[in-house]
Image (cartoon, rainbow over all chains, first blue to last red; front, side, top):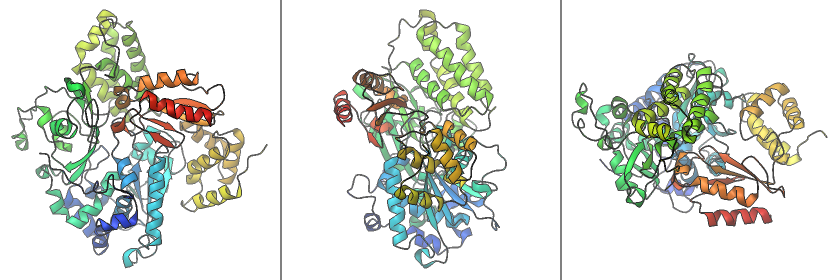
Length: 448
Length: 160
C-alpha cells in the first residue's frame, strides 16, 4: 500500500537543509533527548519494538543486533556506520548524507549510547566528497553546540563522531572488510566467528549499521518504537516503519521516494516512478541492488505454507509488499529496496554481462571460487556476446555460479552468483538465441 | 627527492591521527592526503613517507595502495574523469558518454589526453543511479548527462 512519509526526506530539496538550524526547525534532536533519558537496555528495547530491519541489504533486525553487544566491556566499544554505498542500483544513503546529515549524527548518538560506545565512525566511500563535507559540517556544528563532546544534552556520556574515508572498493561495504579498511588494512573480509559484536574494530566490540538504519532512529525515538513499527503494512512480519525506496533504469521518474514499508513494486515503478520509459513493456525488475535475483513481471507469488501470505498468494510479484521476509519467502531478496527496471529495449544477456563485469572487477580475490568463478563466467559471457560460445559453455555458467554460492568467506560470492543464476534461468531463451545465432538476432544494446 | 608535506597538510595529518586509537587506522586518509600533495599519485617516496610517519612497514602501505582503485600508482593528468558504466547508468546510455569522451580526449579508458590535462577512467557504480548517466570529475559529480553537457565539461577541463 502506498503511504508516503517524510521522516528522512522532509528536508530534501530545501535550501540549507543540511544545517543544524534547519534540522532543528524541523524537530531535529528531539529523539536523542528521549533516548538519553532512558537506560541502555530501554534504548535497545525501544529499537526492537520499532522492528527496523537493516537497510543495507541483509535485513537483520537493528535492535536485536544492538543487543548482541556486551553489557559490560573492559575494552571500548564502537559504532561503525556503513556508508560505503556502492551496490549497483542503490543510491539512497547518499541523499541522507548530502541533504539530511544531522539525522545521521543524531542517530549515531542514540545508537552509540544503546550499545555502550563513546565513538562512532562513519565509513564513507571516497567518491562521495559532498557527503563527507556535509557530514563533517554537521559534526562540527553538533560539537560547537555541545551535542557531541563530554556532556551531550546534559548527560554524562562522552560522545564523538568521525568520518572515515575509503578508497574505492565495493567489497568494503561488507562489514568485516569495512572494519579491516577502517583499521588501515587491505579491505579483505574476515572469517566469522568471531563476530564484530565480540571482536570488531581495533579488536573491540563493534556494531556495524547502515546509514539509513541509524538515520531513522531519531524518528523512532521521537515517534515511539511501537507506533513507528505500525506505520508499516508488514508489521505482522516484524518489518516496521518507513524507509527510502529507490527506482532507476527505464522508468520516467527515477529517484528516491520515502514511504511506509509495505509499498509494492508496481506502486514504486508506476505510481512513484511514473511508469516505463517511452511506455515500453517491462521485461524484468531487480528489486534491491544487483545482488538480488531479477523478477519477471509475470511471476506469481506462491507461498502456501505461511498463513501470513494468504492475502498475496496468486497475485503478481509486483503486488507483493516490499519486505525482507515477504521477498525472501517468495524466492527473491529485498536487498536495499532500490529497484532497477529493465524495459523490452534491453538485451538481458548484455545486462548480465554488465553485472558480471562489475563482480569480476570488485571481487577482492581472497577466496578462489569467487575470484576465479567471476572471471570465468565473464569470459564465457564475452564469448556468448561475441557469438562464439557453445551450449555446453552456457550450461557451465550455472554450474560455476552454484560452486561460488556458499563457498566463500563473505556474502559477496552469493551476491555475485545470485544474478548469474537468476538471469540464466529466467531469460534462458535469450541466452540460447545468442548461442544458436551467434548473436545475430540481438539488438546489441542496453540503453533505449 | 624525498617526499614531505606542507605545514598545513602536516596539521591535517595530526588531526587525522587524533581520530583513531592507533596510527595504522590513519593509513587510508593519510594516503589520500599525500596523494593530493603529490599531483594525485602515490610514488614510492610517498609510500616510504607514510610508512615512516605511521610506524608501518612499506610493504603494508604498498599492500593498501594496490588494493584500492583510487590510489594511483602512476602519474595521472591534471584532472581525472570517471564515467560510471554499471547497469543503471548503462541502461541510460553511459556507453555513448564514454565513447564520446574517448573521441574528445583522444585516449582510451585508463589513458591521459596528449596535453596531460585529463585522465579518463570508468567507474563501478557511483551511487547516483537515479540521475544516470553520471560522471565524476575530480571531486564533483555531474548527473543526468547529455552529450552536450559532457562537451561543456570537457571544454572547461581542456582549457584549464
